[in-house]
Length: 110
Image 1 (cartoon, rainbow, N blue to C red):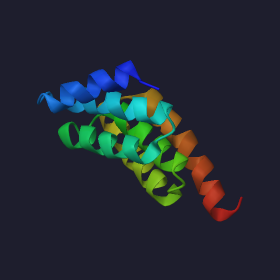
Image 2 (spheres, rainbow, N blue to C red):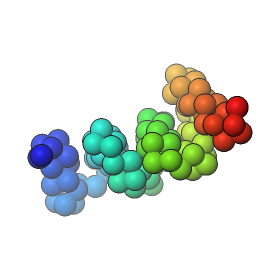
Image 3 (cartoon, rainbow, N blue to C red):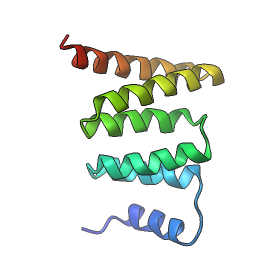
Image 4 (spheres, helix red, strand yellow):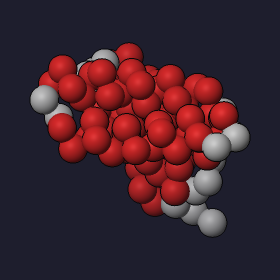
C-alpha cells in the first residue's frame, strides 16, 4: 500500500529539504505505520536540528516505548521534560511526566 504523505516527505528529504519539521513529520508517519525504529531515527534527526523541540522528544519517547526500548524511552522523556520545562512548555512537560511514570512502573514491576 502506498502512503502518499510518507512518499511526499521522503521525496522532500531526497531533494535536500532536511530540517526538524520534515524529520518530525516522517517520524510521525512511520509511527502511524507501526514502524517505531524508523520513526525514532527520524525523530533523533529532528532533535539534532532542533534540540528544544518538545513535541519531537515526546514522540521519540513514544516510538522507543512502542519498540520495547523502555530504558531509552524513559531517557527520551526525561530529556524532553527538562527541555519543555526550560522552554515553559508546561503541557508537553506534564504529558511526558505521565508517560515517564508509566514506564518507571513497568521497569520496576509496579
